[in-house]
Image (cartoon, rainbow, N blue to C red):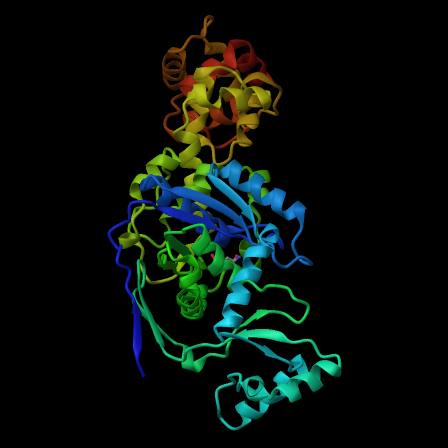
Length: 460
Ligand code: GLU
């Protein structure tokens, strides 16, 4: 059996990089989809290429405009803006032309079996220990038999006739790949009702839009085998298009190494947005898991693009650990300067100035927590006082003018007077002034809280 090798001639990146993210708007996008979108976007950015958003909405029943709009909202929020945008549902003419061409050259044939008939045959094959591959009975039908079936009211679905050979390509992640299409059923490209399934429109668009690289999850490896045969069959129709180079990324698994849990796997981007996860934490996390780069937050998408390199991507599944994501979320907030966060602080009613932000940001896990610190600094809280005598002493020693450096002098005076030191000195003060056991540096925080509130909280 011959082995046809589709060389990735351009493993060194070609002149014009054009990639696509092709979500089906049949639901919300989640971590796995976003990772595909992100890696495509970063690759385009790094190579001065174009990023295409292609809405794979050939399934008219399950696709909705609402999902489409939500996908756009999510991508935009993440910063993954697109250079071109298409809907497959508006491109049926070109898919029809491609289907007509494949029929003409004998690669697309009608088959009349019902789902039940196919199922029965598969069961027989399996019971005989045979692979459940479509037996191509439809190819053996005579014109009369076909006419008789149609007279019965049967409508055909259309299958692509595979060449039955080993299809090979050089994958940017997986290296040399081969798929043996002899072990595959001829894929159905068009359903009985005339609807195009995903496979054909995807290949037609990749050719017509001159997509240079197809970057997607490794669940598509087998598809790539059949799609490469379709690429080859259609190439006379798209004489000026090259075959794309493929990169199949390992799938995501949860922290336990098992498949993503239902909760994580289906966690939508809008849910993360509501939960206060920063877009850059999501993109840093998804860009770096499964690669040799350290799992740290990046300062921007451009910085992530600089790092993009399929050579760093391992073959093992990428661990999607929510704790890592939250750690990166803190890092993103901690690295955000006041000028950048000011509008959000204003919206949250928590803009208490640059010193406030610089004091509390190191303690934030999510942006929402900033509101609690704003209340601690300028609102009413319930102080915690376990030792009223100690609090009374601290109040007595509170400097009359409380400035930026008063904390040190004040706590030294309390230490001298009470003999308390270390945790026994600082914890009761932190608890009284903030109501909390942990938090930012008390020197700056107590200055922000101010003498009046400190005195009030110690007097309770
Ligand atoms: N709509 C397909 C999916 O979401 C696109 C796959 C591809 O990138 O070709 O799985």
